[in-house]
Amino acid sequence: MKFPISVTLNGRRYQREVEPRQLLVHLIRDLGGVTGTKIGCDTSQCGACTVLLDGVAVKSCTALSVQVDGASITTIEGLAVDGQLHPLQEAFWNKHGLQCGYCTPGMILAAHELLRTNPQPSDEQIRHGLEGNMCRCTGYQNIVRAVREAAAMRRKG
Amino acid sequence: MYAPEFDYYRAGSVSEAAGLLRKHPGAKLLAGGQSLIPLLKLRLAAPAAVIDIGRIRDLKGITVKDGTIRIGAMTTHAELAASAELAETCPVLAQAAAGIGDPAVRNRGTIGGNVAHADPASDLPTVLVALEARLMAEGPDGKRTLDAGGFFQGLMTTALKEHEILTAIEIPAHPKGQSSAYAKFAHPASRYAVIGVAAVITASGGKCSSARVAVGGMVPRPVRASSVERALTGQELSAESIAKAAAQVTENLGNEVLGDIFASEQYRRSVASVWVKRALTQAVGRAK
Ligand SMILES: Cc1cc2nc3c(=O)[nH]c(=O)nc-3n(C[C@H](O)[C@H](O)[C@H](O)COP(=O)(O)OP(=O)(O)OC[C@H]3O[C@@H](n4cnc5c(N)ncnc54)[C@H](O)[C@@H]3O)c2cc1C
Ligand code: FES
Ligand code: FES
Image (cartoon, rainbow over the protein chains, first blue to last red):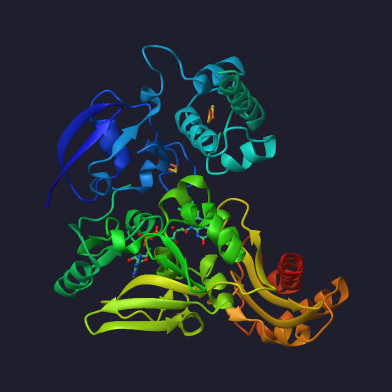
């Protein structure tokens, strides 16, 4: 059985016939050239696959393509506008919030979710907000500093 | 990882979902997918058909009317956690929902899926048992109401029949003098409950006029800590009386306490009273 769906990925509309068992993360990575979204654990725990679904963070390894029919998806590639990095991307760069970069797309979108729901988080709130995302190499200190800087950049506007 | 193949149906209404369930024996309902999709991927479940109830509008939202809180089964953990109305009328539920997993899980996972799944390490079954919630089910034989106390029957087993859908949960809003809290010993990686305790306390003139306490996470299904409840009822509410009552929880844990590589049965039995004390202390603080 195939099921017809349409999604908007980073502002572009796609129509596809998908197998119901297809995971959202595979849909995204197979649409063509948009492979920033990573599969880490594939068991809903590491957050590497985090994307925004209608603006809200979800784990794309734990959603089916058929469930998101009609939705708008933003991946790490969709954050920069007209070649201008998003403040979170800028801050992760400035504060060395990444090393190998594998967790980074998910980490930045989870941080995006945190700042959406709590624009001025404390360090403790940042750590809790990123609870669902694991980094195996940077160490979390610089990631927390990066999110703190991104929040400060937003405050300055 | 790929799930085994299945056919997919999207229900527009509860009655349509009920019809689809009857037509496709062995089909599974799909709500937020935060328990079902991992199970499918691990091939621990292999239904021939999956029926998506995620778009049924009637199943969403929180309303408080005439002292009753009604929560649609498809209301997400994030919505429960963010509800100012719930924080006011039933803090234990908002608090427990806010501590489930992580933000992305809370954005998808639903109260209906959480309680229908009945994982012993889940938070919301324990909370609903302490709240003496009523669960509304709809199936081929019509509608019925189940008490939370009898709903959870064992490890991942509920009183829902094969073709029934959980549609809503009703909880009495706290009257004046009553409040509630949830204390959880969270597994450090998954955040699931190693021990979870929900307490609902009514205070009047500094005394406890009623106490309802449920313990979960460490037992196959949530249990009421009736010895704790009895020990506290009628007492002056103080740190001492709370600690004394909390210690009674060992009487209520039965002989099926769970243990694993992270926390043994013996360890959980030994620290259970600490978590009961924490839940009681916070609920009393809010009730006064
Ligand atoms: C990383 C991670 C961490 C988690 N941590 C916690 C935690 O700390 N505490 C906790 O409590 N939970 C935790 N969970 C589980 C989470 O709360 C799930 O959302 C919840 O258990 C299932 O809800 P769902 O809407 O996603 O249901 P689904 O996964 O869609 O469904 C689960 C089951 O319930 C059935 N079902 C769903 N809705 C209904 C209905 N309306 N009527 C009848 N049957 C129905 C389905 O058929 C399926 O069998 C965690 C999950 C993950 C992935
Ligand atoms: S790949 Fe999705 S949470 Fe790890
Ligand atoms: S930067 Fe390597 S896993 Fe986080």
